[in-house]
Image 1 (cartoon, helix red, strand yellow):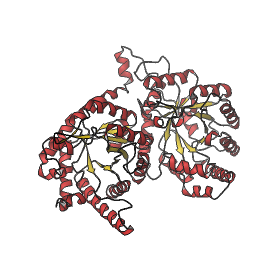
Image 2 (cartoon, one colour):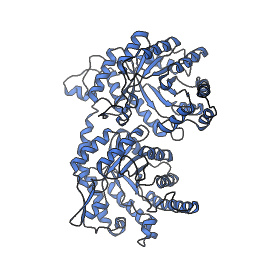
Image 3 (cartoon, one colour):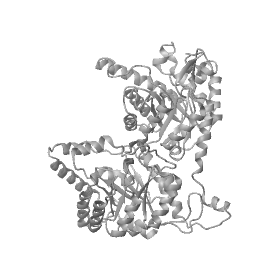
Image 4 (tube, helix red, strand yellow):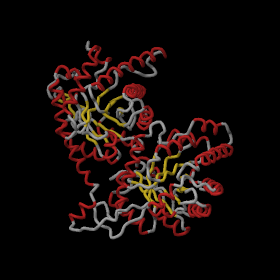
Length: 634
């Protein structure tokens, strides 16, 4: 029985199949033949190709229906057979897949040139309507045929992809939907659109997985994945590269990139955040088998604690840690917990940050959180800074620990170092991609993602390292995780959060939220989870910064009404006053329904959250009281 598709992608890398069209040609089908028609003309051949990919290691196979839409089939006199061809393609794939392999219904571009220059407004509208109907016809047949997933692939026009997503969501609101575009060079479409922007718009339209296929070989795919990787915490990323660039040899079109070379690059893509891997033009079962061999090597990261200990001939009893960690235990349950974020400086002068930490301590902050090289920009070591702050002022600290900068060995060393320095709070995050760094030659590590990091810290709380070896003591960390709440579609992120709780998470620090209704909805949607929710509060200090946050940073949405309010004022000073009033009202509206508050310093100006902490303490808010309940039950 197949597990939930999206949950699988958040736990493991899923291997898909490779090319069908070019592989059919290798098998003797005449070059230029419409291969979609093989579903009704040569069904046994189609079935055998599916079988070959499954034997090679594919856990997902695509239906042979990439171009089986009305526009493309009409030119062959087969326009009335759209349903028949897609239904046959889906049923052949489902038969080959059995109960254990996912079947993805393949939908390619319509073949119509849909752009703003297509014609008059009426002509564009009519064409869009015809394209919409063509997608509806094809997708309906694939769903009828029993596919598990829909994959929209090789789109070059973003507008057409969004139409396809809209149609798919109308037909099957809950079926997993993969949206892939072709990015020939530099992580951009042939018409210059950035992959990150296309991915964002696809997600907003309703896609569950975003990615790329086809393009100009492996190098171009790496560039596309790098651009898309900034969205890895919002959705799984997929990559289906071509086997290099095609060339004509003895009147045959061939793709010369060998499987071993591609497999090496596939491993790099996985480290960059790709969760669904397959192949496009020129790839064969041999490529997929090589991918499988490389991906299999990565499954050794998570090792069962007891199994390893028994192999070593030891029988230590695990601590079976059930606490909430030293950070949460230290907080005063009679007041609303307030975390305040300070970024380490990009230089060696830390006096100003230390001054801010001291002032915030006096004002009544519960803890200082310190990011680790945010946006992959070089900054002072947060572990050292956290230790200095705690030693100097006695306030608890939360260090952000990313999977980007260290391998599994380095991460565990950092966890042990934090314990030895007396730190008791860690926020486990995947980390921003290295592509945004300000330093030359930087590459992301990503041996594990945030799930693996939570599990790693939890094992240290139980007295074992990741290899299962006993540590002769156990840590006492409160484990924090990040959370991006999307009111329109919260289910996927909540499922991810539920898994992190099972792995040992104790508290959540969310992306900035700017309206009380979203906070209330989030608290309601997560009320079944036994962990502290700290909604992120980002004080707005200018209209320009609000526009930047809304349009440039993934996961942050600022209501249009707020942005319009700030733009009413010409002077920056007046915008700042208005922004802070909005923040004060938001805090007042949510103070009694949240477990705590997470204040973020805009541009690292700690004076802004300092005033807010003082005002919160003056009001005497206590929040939901969950902290007291957790402390009593621990």
